[in-house]
Image: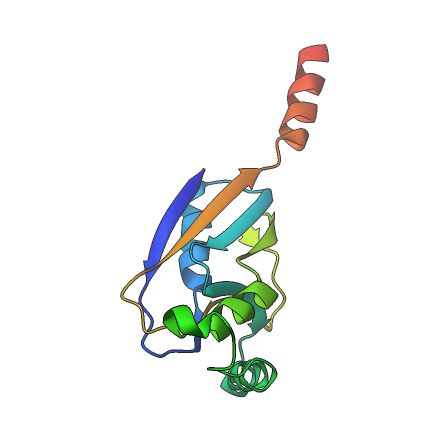
Length: 148
């Protein structure tokens, strides 16, 4: 089962918390056990699991990436001036996979799921949420019932 959500970004570089929207998709699926894949479409954005309690962590992440990968010094900048965005998204990666345990995301207290925008603002970023059910327990249960 999958769901596509759209997220609007308002800055060139920002982390947007999408955890509640992923949780909503999980709840609507009714699936209790398995894996949840969160994947952003596009070559200048990423998905990251990061601390949710203090915004300074997200700000520090953007600052680190700006220092490591400055804007305006890459060959691709001659094309469309977003070479840094491609490199940042390549390092962060387009997706994360999270365990689904008893109908809830297997995140810790301090973890949330963030869309990482590196080439905004964008009216729409498409995020594909794929929920894969672990059928092994159901198959074991069904098999046991057939033997009874």
